[in-house]
Image (cartoon, rainbow, N blue to C red):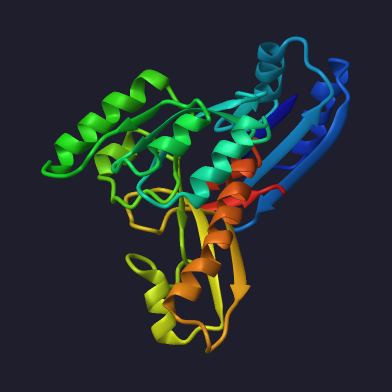
Length: 275
C-alpha cells in the first residue's frame, strides 16, 4: 500500500511517521521524502507491505504532523480515466493498448472526441466512444454537453490525448488538477498553437514534448514530465511533426504512470515527482 503525505516541514517528521507505522507493526518497504526549504514544505511517499486498517493509520499519522497535513493511505490503487481526443491517433492508440493489456495503471472508461475520426479504433478495443462536436455551438453549450458525457463515469482524471480545444476556466475548475494534457513542445518554449512551426522558424536543434496538468493559464500548468529529441537543419515541418509524435506518446505515457502511482505532488504551480 502507498501512503502520500504533504505538510509544513518540521524537525522529526520522518521519525514520527516511522514510529507510528512501527508501533502498528507495519513494515516500510520504501520511503521517499523531499523538503522544499524556500516554501518550508515536506513531501513523502511511503510504500508499506500491507495495512489492515488504512483509516486508523491515516488518522494516527495525521496526529503527529502539522495541522495542515494532507495524508492519504492507498489512494485509489486503480484510477478511472476519460480520454478526450480530436483526430490524431498516436497517443490514444498507446493508451488503448496499455489499457487492453492491463499495464496502464488505470481503467479507460470512455473516449470522447469532437470529431468522429477515432471512433473505429476505440471501438475495436471495446471502449465506448462518444462524439461531442463543437461545430456550430457556443463554448458554453459545447462544454455543457461534454460535461454531461463525462460526469456519469465519475473519472479520477481526464486525459487530453491531442485534444485540440481550449477549455474554459469553469470547466477546468470542475476537475482541478485532474486534467492531464500533452503539449508538443518543451514548455515554456513555443506555447500555444503550432509549436512545431514555431520551432522550425527558430531553427532549434532539440524538440520536446511536455505533459502537464491543465490550469486556467494556457500551457502553463504544473509540469509532470518532459521528453526531448535532437533534430537538425535538414528537417522540414512534416519531419518535425513525425519525430515529435513518438516524443509526445512517450511523455504522456510516463506522466500517466507517475500520476497513477501517486508519485506526483503539486504546489505553487510546480511539482515534486518521486520517480
